[in-house]
Structures are given as structure tokens and as C-alpha cells.
Length: 493
Image (cartoon, rainbow, N blue to C red; front, top):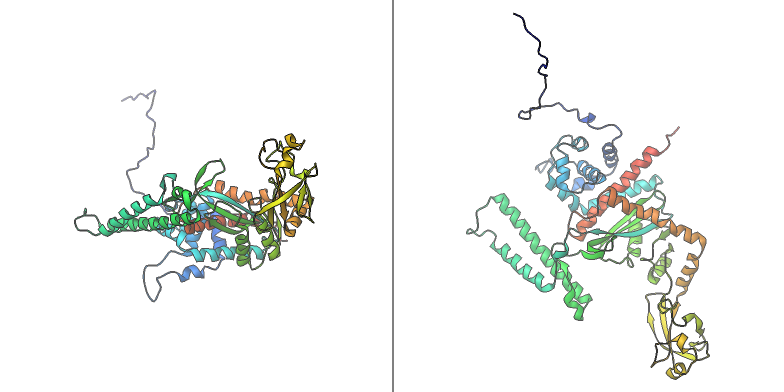
């Protein structure tokens, strides 16, 4: 029987079959290469003293209980997750199921996202101590010198929307309904649900009640600070009561926290971090200095900060602490005439210290009318001429053309010796050169945390928990820089 070959033979194809179970042998050590970041993080974390994390574990060989996950694993997981821009506990748990690096870290163990979420925010003291340990190690290796520290703050958005901000009356209404729902929990007439679901609902309702109670305290605190007509405008978030509207880099406003970072200029390591609800940086310099001193047991020789921190009070505090301070005090606009460019500038009026008078170009006297303190180290003195002297003066069109009833007034700024010495120091080329380095040192840290680590918005609510997440991010940053420096260091002969 003759068979003819087909002109178009049927090709042999191995089709994908997803309706089957498959078992694979996995060599965990070969999941990632030797130079992988996850290995370096695991090694560095393993060198630290984690005894405080172990001490907080409830189960033991004597008492029994379910074995807890190794703290080294949970710490390494969060640090590696942040290094990859992952801040969601659910996403970390999901990556542990398929991502080779996460699988290598866990050794293919299952990690529940609840465990990850709780570990991130509940180990506040242990995390603080761990951050201090890393700083001590970096200092011992010469990567932190504290010869010069740069200070700066950045606004990171809170886990709250603008619509969650309510006035006191609305908060009280929400709180009353929340308390009623908590009372109704366990009512047999309610819809039957599983015990697990009922416990979850109970936790959610109690948590909401606590947040509303805190929101009520926060709005009352604001009312004490802003009494009178402004009292009705006070609002706080009912989901994150400690968050405040702050200006963002794009010029808009959003519920945020102010994250303060201190960076050692030697290798760009972060030596202190704090999270505050205050939008202004003016009162944050001294707490940053105290935090550095507490962690590293010594003070920085020099601190550099921008104009937001540079006040008369800050200058005096740094002098009292024996720390050299570089900043931007700015010009005195009130006494410069810039605010009124069409008038004769205050510099045209001569001051006589003996009589405490100002004399105008026409020889008329301006008498003192009081003073106003501009914080520690600076006082504004106000002087005013007699109305009849100005009305008949030939220079009136150039001096005070719009002043028809009163004489010309001038402000004179008087600064303390410390502030004047600070201005003289900042006028030197060396001080200006050092000040210009601030941006590329500390602002780089903020850019790395936001762009590389993805922390543009917190994943947790409340200032304390936000501070914990900021600590995780700064710890990740320091370990990443540590790994980079160790790999680029020349090999010992």
C-alpha cells in the first residue's frame, strides 16, 4: 500500500496544560545570586543584637505556645521590601509566594500579612534601639563622623483624605453614633455572622471610636490655640486626627506629616529622624540635636539648616550648646524699605543711640513709639515724626506721599550680639560654600526615600505609627548605602 506524503504535515506542539498539579524541587540557596541585595541585608541584620526583639516573644520552651517567626526574618523582609518600593503588608505577603528574593528570605515559609503589619508598628522601642545600633556600627567603621550634619524636613502625605476633616460638632455626632454601635455589638437580634467576622467588626468599631475620641481632643487643642472667631474654622481628620494640611512641593495642600531628617555629610548617612504634626520647621532644630546626641552619645561639631530653621532662638540655642550653626537668616524686609519701594528708605534716617531718636534728611526728629519682639535675639523699634513736621516738609512726595494725617514712621531692627555675629559669619565665603552643600546632602535623602523607596504617602495612621514607618525607611536607606560602600571599598591587600 502506497502512502503519499502530505504537503502540509501537522506540526507537533506541546500545549500548556494548567489543569494539573505540579511538584517541583526547589534549591532555595540558588533562588538568588550571591551578590543579591537580599543576601547583604540578611547578613547585616544578622550582625545586629536582636535580643530585645526576642525578649518580647510570648511563647517559650517552658511556657509553650506557637513558635514566633524569627525577628531577623521579619526585619529583613521589611527592609528589603522598602528597598524595592513596597510598603504594603499585603503586597509583601503576596511577594513571599512567588518572588525569588522574598522566597529566599523566608525559606519558603508562609508569612501572614497581619504578622507583618503588626511587627512594623508595634516594636517601637525595639526599632529605635535597632536604628541606634546601626548608627553605632556605622560610626565605628568611620562612615559617620558628626563633623557636619545637615538638617531638613519634608512633607509626606498622611493616610487620610481632605474630606475626612470635620469640625467639632460633626465629630461629636460621629462619636455618638460610633459609641452606640459599640454598645449594640453582641445583640442576638443582629444579623448572624461568623465569630471571626464578628471579632473583626468589633475591632474596627472600637478602633473608629478611639480615633473619633482622639479627633475630639485634637480639635479642642486647636481651639485653645485659636480662640475667638477662628475657633469655628478648626477641623481635624476623623481617620488620622494628628495629620494636618501642609503645603506640598507642587504648591497644593494635603493632609501630611512633617518628617525631619538629620544627615551626616561624611557619607550621607541619616543620623536622626522625627515625625511631627507641625508644618513649620522653626522649632525642630534643637530636638534634632538632642536626638543625635542621645543616639550617638556626642554632639555634632556643626549643623547646617535652611532659612526655615534659622531664627534668633535657634542661633542662641546652638551657641549655648557649643555647636557651630550655619543657616540662612535672610534680610530684614521690615527695615529695608523693600515693602514700600516708593518711599524714602529707612536707611536715610540716622539713629542717635544717646537720645534713642531717628533724624530724617531734613533734620526733623522721629520719636520712639514702642517696640515689638521678633523672637529671641531681635526687637523692632518703631519711631514716628510729628504730623506738622511732615505736612510742611518739601520731601513729603518722596518720603510719605500717602500719609495725610500722621507723621512718617520707621522701623529699626535691633539684634542681639549672637545674631549679629551669626550674620557676620554667614557673610564669609567659607560659610556660604558650606551652606551650599546642604541641598545635595540632605535633600538627596528625601529624594531617595520618596522616589526609590516609594514613601510619598504613609501606609499607617497616627503620628507614632508614621514615625515607625519613617524609621523603617531611614533604616533601609542607611543599610543600602552601607552595602554600596562595602562593595565599592577597595579590597585589603
